[in-house]
Image (cartoon, rainbow, N blue to C red; front, side):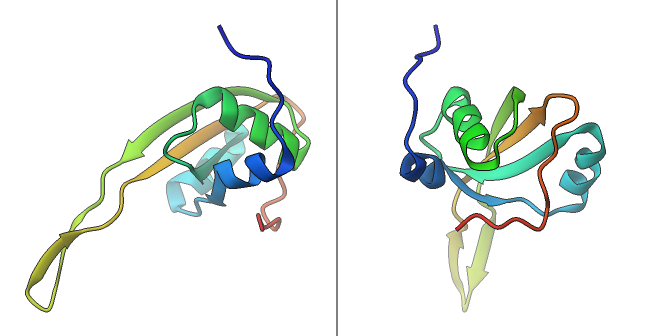
Amino acid sequence: MKSKIKISDEKALSIIHKPMLTEKSTNLNQFNQYTFVVDKKSNSYDIQQAIEKIFKVKVTKVNTAIIRGKLKSFKGNIGYKKDIKKAIVTLAEGNTIDSSLEIK
């Protein structure tokens, strides 16, 4: 069962890091879906509340995925990029997020 605890503005801004601006995520905008990089510890309900609080829209569905960091080498040293968690947020009909908005 989802907890009904409301989150604060600071918590909402700490959950949503930045929007993902890739070709695939841009194509999803026509289906009223938006993609964000989010905190790895957050769950779908926290993400839904944060999006609704920040952008003042109605969220119908949240899908999340953890993207594993790629293998990289730098001057002979091998390492990995950081893992990130992305959330694909589906909005209710008639709701949109202005793509020019920036999350502080």
